[in-house]
Image (cartoon, rainbow, N blue to C red):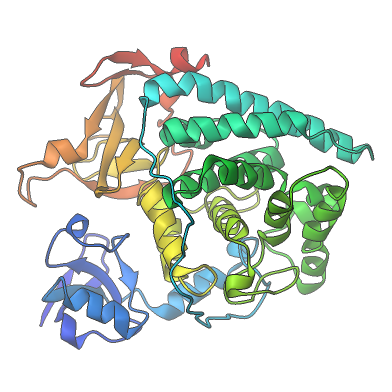
Length: 442
């Protein structure tokens, strides 16, 4: 048995796959991760099925002996994650098994435009979505019935953009700054959900329902005290009881607006959880509508990587790993895997450092090469800013190179890392030279 130290000082042990036990954390394989069906690099063994899957692909794996189930539990129950959890206390780890998701007449989508071409259209959509949400929220705050026609129209435009090329919306949702947390949270949740729905093959009608429901899912929070909203990541039991009422308040505000049942079901069910630990009704499994399941997963992910100012954001890569550890617990297993396939291990807009020290931001990825996305490099190996950024396609760069020669992502960096502002750069790539700020009109 081989014991080694990884660069950050975490002890790894190399063992045969037949010796794996439930609860172990697999941190490396005897073959490249992208040649396996496992959607993330590094995960806990949760069942004998996980072991059987590994046996069919590997002879040995490395386990991280410092990455224990207890440490994951402690992180998940800490104050900074409470907003994303369904309950303020307790660790409901019950797994719920369901048949695989079945999408009726799924649609197979393909990118029909480049990210560069889609950015201008997407930016206009995001601006119009913010404006329409502002009008709706303002009407609700003033006690008037909201006019949802404009937000419904802009939702259809968001769907069209996501269908043409989802990377543009993802990029803008991750790099655009907005002072109002509620608008940003609603918009970003809608974008994550649409990208996931596209991956599932939902038709454009269902995507419209999903997007509109996500945009309106936070409307009930307008009736909550500011103090509870400011501290939603660390509420006590009494405050959490008030906080969870926002779902029913939102449904009530939308009761007479003429919304379809599918849209209302997203608002009503986006905080329900697969194992019944959610709210307001605590339903579980297949009693949660599919669109609400997608919305709930997207909203949880956005809470992890983009909490309110009082919370500490997770890197997208860490949030992806946490989601994978929650499969069939708070979120259905195949939905989690499809979400990860859709957004990648390092989602578009993620700040990263490469193994040679260069830093940049993920521009796009392909499901076939989950660990090798396209990266817009903005610094040299000593982290000094470049005069012009450049696109590095890791999959193309590594083609034909052995493992020791490959250029890969060493780590995901926190959002807002100093010196990594993509709008400061002209970009040089294999196709052309372009300026992000000129394209999106920044």
